[in-house]
Length: 171
Image 1 (cartoon, rainbow, N blue to C red):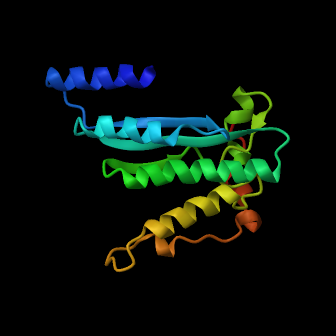
Image 2: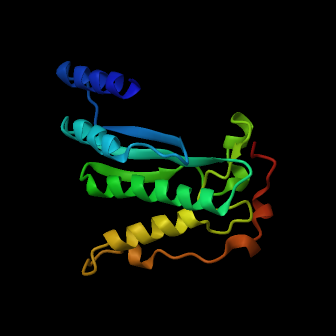
């Protein structure tokens, strides 16, 4: 698998004393998700090499037309991947590949697929956004002296003047 090839490369680099400090897992997946236990095991083996792990480019595409069931499944996939990341001490970051379906790469490269991000085309939070927010809120230590995710909130961004940023530079 690609993951095993990367693992072998990282291990070989360490053996040859070539600096490597971390790996990123690109997560372009569908609403059927991934085997999260296998994902956790995979993160663990990279962590056992002493590497930091980052979930990068996370998006969860849905085949059109999109239904409320699809959006609920998408939210579950996002939540489950974040949960595994939060439980792995070597996982240092979780990032999505954009934030709004309005500017997603998905429909330009995967015909019939779309709605992969946590905000819709009108910048309104989708169930996936709330799933991530809730997961982060549950993970936040209540007595932490540093800023934490309990203050992580959003409003409805649909009335913001996003056009002032100009769409001409997007796909």
